[in-house]
Length: 486
Image (cartoon, rainbow, N blue to C red; front, side, top):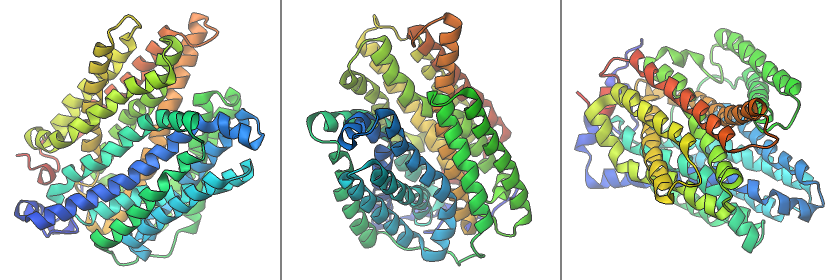
């Protein structure tokens, strides 16, 4: 596997050990940058899920059928799928800070327009605009952080970015239900306005613009192939997971996505500067993070889908009650943040991902044993612990991905990593829903019952468990200059 000179990594320091020499001012700048990026990503993560509970109210306002409102979700997903691969090239061409500010601005303007939409077609158009901003905001925000921190601060920085990814999908649905019930569905978009304005101002004031030289011309063919491929894969998983189309249609869409992926692989081998650079998989730490992280995220992506449904349909809890219980996993993620650096310094990436991966999968599988007779405190304890260990695993994968990547290839790495991450989270819902449907068929249930949800949790837990042994592909001291593990 490639070996990378120490000086080639890190935008703010010449060596991996520079973090030890950072003064208070430098550390404060790093923390401010991480907080700004995390806040913007939290806004995007919440927005992508908060709309789901407001769809019936929006349908009444537009005079549309509720089932047709799903296009408001799929249009946003389409924008993400098409534009995420272009984010790295855009950052190199126009500057990371500039693109991040523009992305926040586009997302905020899209939010304003969505909140003022008077028809379903207008809402769909404005959601596409929002998605363009969101597609740039996630990978470019990560790249902005990577280029402004020394390598020794990578784990701590990724802990900040892990938090919104884990909390957003859990906070979104209950927040959307609360706002829609007590106020107006239009306010779920308006809450992004002050966050977006503050984000643009703070990025301008506190974040340095660290650039790389502009690379080759834009890969238009790769852009088209990847857009179609990712759209087919994400929509195929969505159709299969939510039962929105016959099985044959879902399989056909997924098949088109797989064929497109093969076609893109051929294109990438022939193109001198492909939009998604698959040669990054030659770096062992990046390969492990991609493959194992994809399996692990099936469980992470399924959790916000499975838990609220089980609590409401099988336990008889209200949406508000289920939201308050589910939020315990987010609280665990918050507790983890200060622990991640110490854990990885003590155990290193390989042993942390192996041991913590087994623990995370076990706690996820334990959710299958939840029953209405369980004390609420016991459920809270399992969810709190599960959120803690899943967050540590997520942070480790995110930091490991960039441990060996040269600085000149960071933008390409963030594009590829963010693209695969988006697809893998969508897979979680599909796997969970397919497991529930299969259990209903075997058990002869007309609707999902408690036993069906239990099987769903066990299946996604097995996916997460399968990720843990892949850490053994790395040596024990892999990327030790990132963790400080010896």
